[in-house]
Image (cartoon, rainbow, N blue to C red; front, side, top):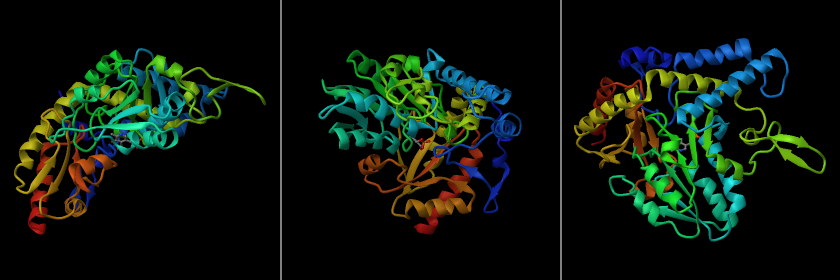
Length: 406
Ligand code: PLP
């Protein structure tokens, strides 16, 4: 039984006030709040168990190494990878996509090769590919969305040519909440020999992810959106792709032998984890994943689907509110503007005065903003602890904003 009031008590920050009002935290798309179990695990690690990993023989170093390495298995199971060695632990999606761009794509691409992207991508899944465009002459092929935010997987597959080397696509749009059929894209791409990278930053917190069912080659997650610490994350790399990949960052741990005139690499995945990793952050992420497993991703998804449907009905009460992204199966991520009214920043300031935290701006999605013909939106993104009452508070504040700026 999913008792949201009980669950809220696990998150200390949710009991604070902002501007004299109970905090309504709807900025989960940017970063989610942390349950006490994660906070306690971090404190415990630093107070009782802290040491560096992979390099010591003493008690604490062995203990921390065991704790750190156990997280790889938890992430592997969370994503249903075939083996935990297909998981590279890192600081988040930005690092994961850069690793693929530098370590896998750069050595095997040349001028005229093509990378397929959608106009909905976050800058983290755009800028590294621009590096390849600028430095190698790779062509970026952009796939458009429908006006409601839907992405037709066939449109992606139809864009494949003999020069296509990679498809890089978000599982869930951070602006529109659109769910992308990454399974259909992966299946079609695989049949044509084209690898697929899925940016799962916004998906993994809202739904059960199964990388083997999807059939993708790379899948990135970001720990701080999964109710874990910032600076933690991971990327799933199908073992064939992992074997093809060159190291991205060089340093300690990722080597086997270093001599003046030759060098050899550690085995994957450590080959891709140079230097001291985000040790305690990853341990915190492991606890966050256990927390999600205990609640159950299916139960979280059901709760958030009910929130989404309630929000859709309530947004209709705000006369001049325009929603961007209206597909019926979208995740609980809502971007909106108030027609003829203030800038998104002004709207978010009014909401903030009522204790409601939303995001306002371009959401690191320049091409999508161009597609929508907007410079900014407000974004309310729901998490596992949000309630319908909180949606009512936001709607009331939006009605006030409408009156103020009308
Ligand atoms: N991709 C998407 C869809 C995102 O929403 C975000 C963060 O907002 C990122 C990538 C980047 O994640 P991070 O900055 O944690 O690496």
